Length: 222
Image (cartoon, rainbow, N blue to C red; front, side, top):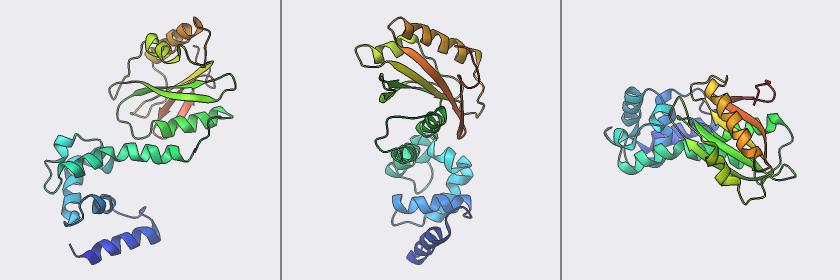
């Protein structure tokens, strides 16, 4: 494809944003950086036709992506990494901030932490006596519909550390925010396990499609 087409599409994106772009145009714009010397328009069309959306493309297996003509392994790997890059970009807005003053602030942080994941994942935010985040830990990753966590997985990350309290957060890729019975029971088990070593479970945040709920604010007993 003529270099002029690329320049026009980039200029259009910079001037007007990509909100008005068609699905294949957004993908084509990104493919410019991955495939510098090919016409990416038909590649973008084929990817959309095969997978349905940019989201599905970036969460497809590398082996499936390279079946599309024009997509090599390196381009497939970069597409696969795109959601992780987006998360890193979102989290970078917090800089070195380690203290959050409200549930709303913690919840928004958890939304960014779990953005674009297609499987359920459980994170733990470890806080010291001043409610400063010491570290965040990916405790477990499961399937699109569940993640299984045992209390010992939590305990091993906080033993022999200055952790005084913990906030759990996990996502529901399907979008529903209501905790399942398993979510409630797992939270209770983790709370009891932490209590045996003198650590308090402050809250459990559930994230779904860009929003969240707090166990505490919705009075879910744990």
